[in-house]
Amino acid sequence: MILLLLVTLLWAFSFSLIGVYLAGQVDSYFSVLTRVLLATLVFLPFLNWRTPPRSALILMAIGAVQLGLMYLFYYQSFLLLSVPEVLLFTIFTPVYIALIYNVMARRWTLKSALWNLSVAAIAVAGAAIIRWDNLSDAYWRGFFVVQGANLCFATGQVAYRQFMQSARTRGETLAPRQTFGWFFIGASAVALVAWIVLGKPQYPSTTVQWGVLLWLGAAASGLGYFLWNKGATQVSPATLAAMNNALIPAGLLVNLLIWNRDADLLRLLAGGLIIAGAVALSEWHNKHRPTKN
Image 1: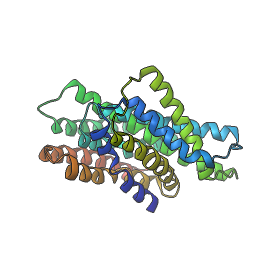
Image 2 (image 1 turned 180 degrees about the vertical axis):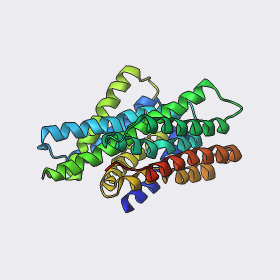
Image 3 (image 1 turned 60 degrees about the vertical axis):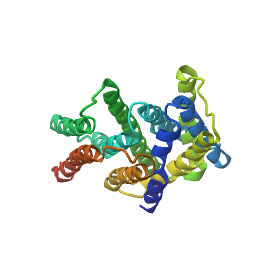
């Protein structure tokens, strides 16, 4: 739990740094590639090259999804949404974590699917309130792009937690510090392909932008994701889901106090409460749903 709290504080500034200094100024694919390559360099000296090939490939696949694909969605969202909107729309991650666990436990039914669609409809209504006077196509694209990032992040967390538990059960020793480099290598592979195919020659032009990329890569990604995933293996699925949303108030506080003092607080509050209510309703339903013995 302590590790997750520390990373929450570390990540609270990341949203605003991307939205203020990188979005629309530096090619998003280059930003993603630089960030994950820097994180890879942090762990490369510790990497155990004799890790069993199967385990290395699984860790690379998890990193490709949780970090590589997630960042591709995530950075695109800042071109379509404001920082507070991106933050608010990440609130669905715990819902996705619960859904993925339910699917893995084979508790997925038509009734639960309809329930989750209803919860999603309530959340979409909350999103509409935030920009009621400007519900453009770009806004809704941004909303669903963030959901793509949320889904990738949730999938990676569940997969890493399950994989590490399975490795311990098999008696396989996988020291996180010596194997987490594979996670970032997988993410780097995805980011490199995306940059080659979709990237534009729009590179950092100031020392501040390079400094932001360095901080996001070495600290927020390198140290942050290592501690977050390690913390995810030490808590219950319910605690992990809840901690995913602790970042939202922290990130909003940083953004609104330092960079975005002119935001429409009333609409953010009204829409945010509806979205939070939808998530709370989903979590209440999951806790009180009868289980099959």
